[in-house]
Image (tube, rainbow, N blue to C red):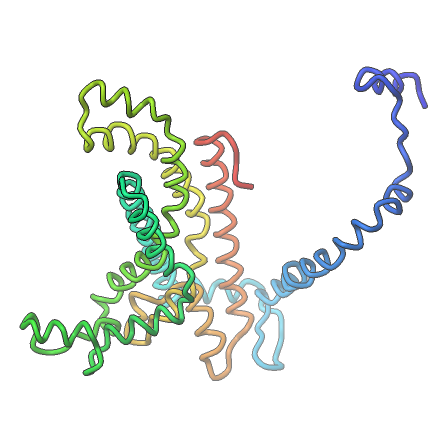
Length: 319
């Protein structure tokens, strides 16, 4: 051991460390490595091995006819109006859903924070949390039944009885009605769970700030506007930033609610890939892989931008 190395070790701890060879250290910790091995194999098989399929983005892959086409799949993709429509719908639906759900979660969080009755507060929290644990398939079945234009449709039948409408409204098959209905369903399902992080922020607000506002004669609404909302502002920004990276990953909520009559306003990138892969007589897996690669690259760029924005806002990134 060199004199310089000894001096560095003495400066750090006072005694020279006994640095064992790598092989011996691995053998001594073999139990930990054996426990980690199944997880490592799972990650390699499920997350990294499928990435080898990215090469098919540059192939024409129809049944057994596989041949190199270079960037032709991407040229076809960018030339298709359906692809651009799906991309536009993805951005509109995802961003609108994010903003609506975040705004609703903030409003409900403030409302819960102002509730004085603890029992009523806990009961209300439980009720609004429950939809989050339901699968989207179940949620779609419930709302399809409620919004049906047949005699079993609760909403249509109720509106008819009240004299509001004379003929049934086909909510889920109307290009004008589908998006508002979709936003309402998602708000009902996810808003309650979204309040968790905002309630945690509200619980951390210094009570002395509210006491100072009381001394200054502030009303309850003034305390909400000038104390609660500013304290939540940083958390709201962080939530928005962290979720921007996931705007292209929407699939299941749309898939279980949309239909061929609303493709123009409901078809997103993931459902477009699904249709091109499984609903074509002879699908071109190379083309759909190219669309998936495009989505992944854009998602990666959004993740890096979100990470950069997160560092600027809260001083540390998300990755």
